[in-house]
Image (tube, rainbow, N blue to C red; front, side, top):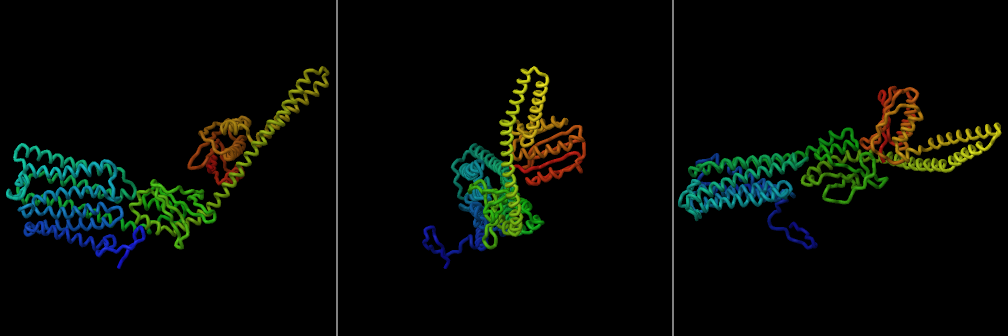
Length: 580
């Protein structure tokens, strides 16, 4: 016997009947047979001469019941399945009108209202088992009141003969006024049409919020239900001239409604097919395998452009992204769905960060992760190498930062120390020169003062070479402008408002300075642009000379040491350095 364990660890006996979620196909078959038998008994007087109507009705009831059970065994579609199961038996009971005696027609008209009410609410709960926002909650309440309450008002104020039934059936009419009959009939007709129109509007509002896999699998069902609701309401407004006309109306509405469970079953098959086909799609999209290709393949298959993959690097004991940059996965929250992926031996492999809406398609996601595990393993090896490169680049950046700090300190010491003393010496010599009368002594003092001034200029140039003070105090544009003045070069600067780390700013300055020095002897006009693009600090030097064969080895080595690159295209030299 099958046993289960409760929350407290107590053993509980399994029920005598098989669990629906363990045997969904068997229960779906039983429900389909039950709904079909109910419809057969309910409409027996009509089926003898209307074989086609019987076939369509039995198919509609059986299909809706089977779809309801299959959906009821799902994790998020249980409410939809229950509502559809109830709707299938309601539609079967609608055909009690065929007996045209006793309480049968009364049960039939209310069963019809319950069929449309439960069917519509069930679709609103599809596919995640909840109502989405106030419009759907308002319609679920208002629609039920309008359809069922409206039918009650019709029974209380209109005769059964208005719907093609016999006059002697059980019918609880309380008001026998022609005026009240007309008012209620018009009012209920308007309310029913409004309920159908607002249901279509709610469906339209709902579909605008769908995206990705959710849109692909849900939108066809929602659109079809909206159309069926509007057409059914239109059919219901026709004049009823007899029982056969009333039953023909039921037949047309049932035929339209048959498309809904068929669409739900088709979506289920499409979802299963997507789970089966996902392996082949991933295989095609990840050739040749790489971290970026694997991530983009998952995005394409799961239709989630925000999806990201963080690979586990055992040597570092941390996760990295596709570029090898360290990532610290945030704590669990409801805004994202993060799925850890392990190897066949249970070792950590990666974390896939996805849209939480994909929780409703867990089967598809699981299939994709299992199918893509081999590609993830290959990409993990690449990202491990990339992570080492990133570590080296980060270490070089730290050394560059330290070097920039040390050069800045040396420049400041020279400025505050030796430069100030040379300035004081030159001023002292000028003062002494003014007090000396002998020409020979004045000439000697002037030469000494000129030598001190020259030494001061050379020391300033040396300090500027160690670290340009303007770069720290006024930023990159001012430092480049000062360099252009010293080179006697016409330079147009287009520098965006960006201030990277001191080390990176100095590296770009030295790179551009070398390029400007190269161009100074050959170019008459230069345009310098600095901007940020795709996570890189970009510097461009455009001159009226070609950069090919211009001795770019030093610039290239400096850029590559920081994980960057250079590109020489005709008269433009472009340097790209990764931001910190």
